[in-house]
Image (tube, rainbow, N blue to C red):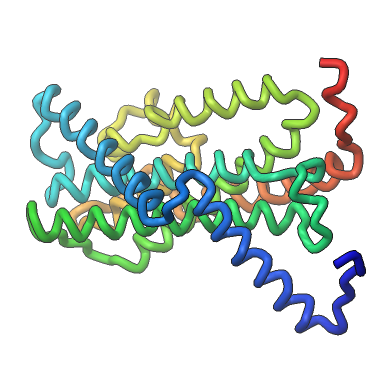
Length: 273
């Protein structure tokens, strides 16, 4: 129990790390609810409520058909799924246990494992919620027709990955300015309600409005997802490569910042607050 663990080779170290990430992912999934099934039902319920709210908003505005020729439900879900996954991944990475957490007293753990577990738990929950809602829509409302399902799935993973990368940047700064980073992260997630473009079609937006939104990688992800989902829509004002390069750049900045912060953070930082 009190002996320090030593890995004999690379394969043993890899297997140990994967096992720790798996167990931490299960731990994350069981944190919110004592019953794992209830926790997953709650995630699905939140996604259903979000879809219902946007259906109500569009009905109130008098928009009862998709601006793109095709399914109205696919149009709404293509934006909501990406939006929820992106913001959930950002919050999970930002809220993962740090180097001064009580869990880090267990020798095999480190921040890379806790961050990976938090991100994977969100990916599992959001993917399950998306799959269940699409199945329910296809079964009880109308047939769901998606032109190219695999590129849409790739965009879903891109929304999750970009959220993780932005969360890493916020996480690296958080120990230096906790309240400020919390406020900025909340402002960013709230701004995504509009700036993500999930309520609009990029091809129909004027140039002035488009210039206000095209900085956001989620805007490009949602527009490209609709290009893959609808056979009659070809995105002209967004790019597949922009969110990839932007996410990779943010990931490098976040990793370097996390390494710099982790080597200097201590429990005594908050002692005088």
